[in-house]
Length: 96
Image (cartoon, rainbow, N blue to C red; front, side, top):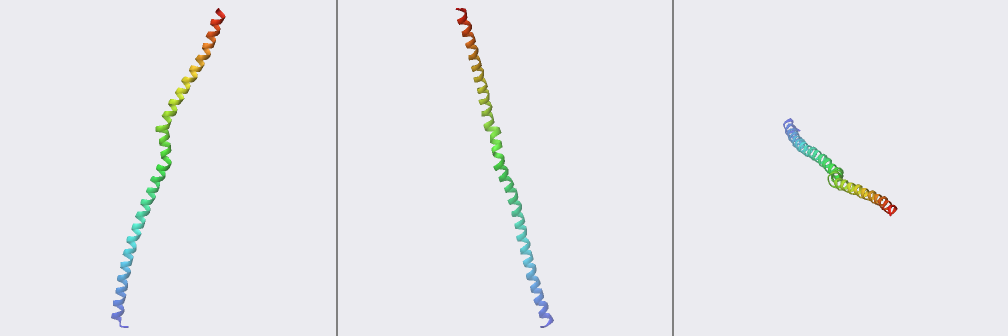
């Protein structure tokens, strides 16, 4: 082969190699960007998936439980006062 033909073929191969490298670089950048987005979306998803029950408990369920606890406490007080009524009834019967 002639040196000029070899140089032309080498230039063509070098140009093709450069095009492939640029395309490869674009694809790698897209893959890297997608991997970063995927990571943060997974973090967000699992944060919501694991954090939502706690948030719901503290802001929705806990107030109801607190009100139920106070209702239960007042019901216990009422029951205790009923036992005091028995004492009063015994006192009234003893006075007859």
